Length: 207
Image (cartoon, rainbow, N blue to C red; front, side, top):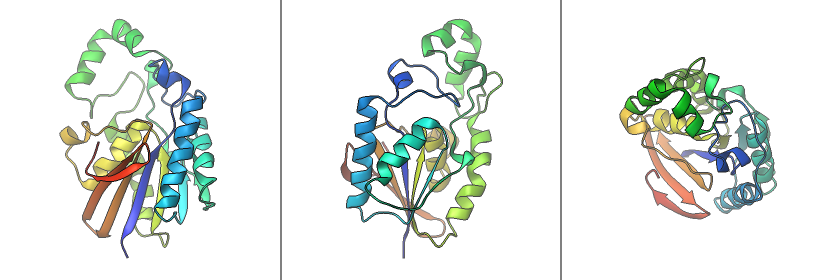
């Protein structure tokens, strides 16, 4: 039986709207964000449900997971491995504020986004190491259909690892709040990706 992992990003938050770097900090879901989370739950229910949900413990993902699970009634647990990137000194700043205060670092980020580490923060290599153990466990778990409720940057890391993408390709993967990824693994070492955008799909590939 094919193993399936769904990657669900939290719904839109107030800081998403403000273009403010959240990282490990939090801001509430907007009304649109709650609607997005509800739609994600309906999408997964239409897919036949899941055996389990695993979510980042941050408030925005916790709230999203609970809204999703209202349609699934699946076992839900929280795992620190799925937390968002630690943005270090950039946490809480808008993108414009970061560019003004850290111009050299901001340019370095654009040159090599996978390996760039914000001051006192994590890069995507760090995040991949952090989540590797959880992914390895999930790929051998009896639960064969699992939804991971996580964050935008962590989603990119998960897709990169599951599809064995090169870093240069991984950084082109996008995961807006209104999208759910489905990664199907018919056998070890083989993976197929598709996505649902605003409940419509599946569309093959990555967004």
